[in-house]
Amino acid sequence: MSKQQNALYAEAGANFAPAIARLAHAMERQPDQAAELVQEIHLELWRSFARFEGQCSLSTWVYRVAHNVAADHVGRQKRGMKTVPLDQFETLPAVHDTERGIAENHAMARVYHLLQRIPSIDAQVVLLWLEGQSGAEISAITGLGGSAVSVRIHRAKAMIAEGFHTHNEDM
Amino acid sequence: MTNPPIPGWTAQEQDAQFMLPGAFASKASKFERSIRRRNWFEFGAGSIVIAVFATVAWLTADIASTVMMAAWIAIMIGVFVVMINLARFGSNLQRLPELDCRTHLRGQLARQSTALKSVWLWYLGPLVPGITLLHIARVYEFSAKMGLLDAIIYVTPSALFTVVIFAAVHWLNLRGAARLDAEIDALDQLGQF
Image (cartoon, rainbow over the protein chains, first blue to last red):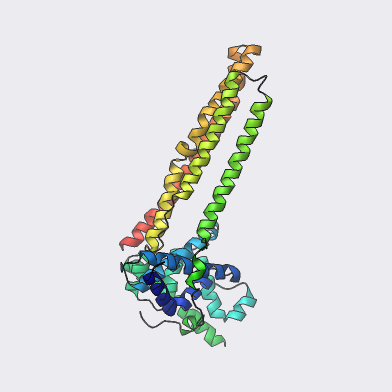
């Protein structure tokens, strides 16, 4: 355990703890499993900082580790279910668990539902966009080409904006 | 970094904090726990198979032919080799989650594809000598009662059935590998444009 490793971990905690919690709760909807995923990401981040030598920005490093650990965590269950690519959605999918939908704000619940149904690589782009990452940053984190990222952001933006617009009109 | 598009999204979990690093010293990740659990499961299943064959060999030691005893031993060795191969595949995973997400996922898919394509070598192959000896032993034992030709005709259906099962396992794994290769190709394209 080096001082630098702990310092990087503390810096990551100060800047990214809420984003990592949001990622975990978006990828894993069971609260106890989400809490476990959060801990798993913290552990892997701390371990990974022993290998950090400034290969990329701290932000890119943290998001890469967090998203890869989250994708591994849900990978098995996602492999078992049939995911639908993002470009095949016209609108945000409806939430069948109405109790959860009401509790979470209906439009937000539909975003969560979308993230559950699309392949991990698509969900990663949408989540990073929701966190305010730029296209170039998303490319660096996910390894997708600029056009592939743009297409997904465009699609997510249209759907989510429409979903929130409809929700506000309904209220 | 740009302004978050949905402020309601980033307003969530604002109180979240990282765990203290002291808690990590003795903690195994879920990933490590699942590999350990899988290794134990495979070790347990393999041990049961070996124990069953060892019991059969022991119970039939007086009446079984030398070829049949050799078949039991070869099957036990084959299962043991498969257990070692399974543990080897599970243990040499190097986890580098700091790679970009596409490369990380691609590496996993490529590794799984390679394992599936070589199933004939590391999973089926070690069992072939024992199974082959078993059928030879059956021909040898039946030939004493009914003659060599009739014994071969008698044993052929079960031998063919075994060949079909092995071929089916190999084919299903190749089909799985082809599906993974298609996913890898799609990922490669995503990285290019």
